[in-house]
Length: 506
Image 1: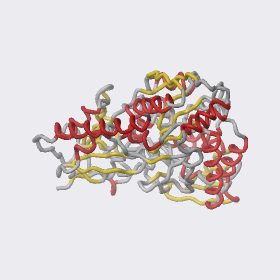
Image 2: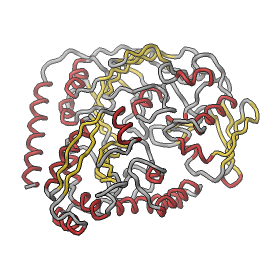
Image 3: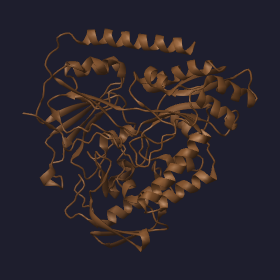
Image 4: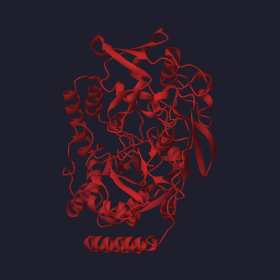
């Protein structure tokens, strides 16, 4: 029955792609290419503009590297580079980090950046009242010393092999004390752009910061507009008509083929950290029974999920780790697709007649489609899955992430190397494995790369065996943009739309 469903699904998607490709292949006006401005399409609008107080990836995709900068930064290859810190030294067996800060840096409101401001930003991120989405990154800092305006010293309670990497994340950007509370709607940063206007529900415009501290690397763009378009066909139409110059993360894979072969456009398929997982609420039955979790995992054919949810674009995963991350272990074979064995496990767990569950599904295309495929697959082993559409981020954050009011849910975790979330107290999965928490803690403490990656390998194997979530696939970055536009990132090692090097070909 499932095989027939798969063939029907493939045929239907292929027919839809061909029909839509024909629809969009008609003659269209040439895409205009203004030389000092760009219009970027996004499927999700950020709820605010300060990545240091809220988690949604869309915040960083607008403001990180454009408005806000950090002591370090992550480049498009995923490597750590200096930014507001020109350099650093590490001493005391990894417990002391001395940063030499750049001179002449100012925020867009004219306030100078120095070690006192950096201390404020880090103290704010790690303080008792902090709502920073990665607050735990800063918990290892025991004291912050301002030695002079250009010298910042972080004293750690234990070594932290990932500290320089963490300091390059959107959640770690530097904020200016007098404007920090208003950054959600009126961001003030040290970056090459500043906010010009934000028409919520429609668009946001950045304008070049003419007083940007790094004059030699001032961006070529004078303005950049983000258009927020959630509907898939509207996204495609906007690209084809030239209403937007680029959709770096195009949200409709079934339409992606319609762009190929158009000489006016560039298409790319890049790597991301977007791990699509179906979270299970381990705090309650039936998910407190490992046999139930294992049975659900064995009922899932990951490749069929990828075909049905994302038109065949994606890479299967067996734990909360991507193949492009250092130390990746392929764990997709731990619980391979085997519906008959899945039924037997359910019976052993006390559910010979199956069970009924709900899945709270954010109203985003990948989540809706994935839930529908899971619904069909789980029905094959007697599990009735009711899809509950859930507004994202607001309702999903309040009900699932914070309130833990769910059976199953589904979301793409966008942060890189975030396997440690399963060790956090009261995280929404409700996963509690002291051995896992110990492995992650040791990995984050060690400064030896090989040892750290070996520990991450252990952690991956534990998640694959314990199944606190159904590990499905990594979404690629499907990008489409005007062929004359250069400098957009093909890969996404961290959620971003860094426009600092974007230019137009003459």
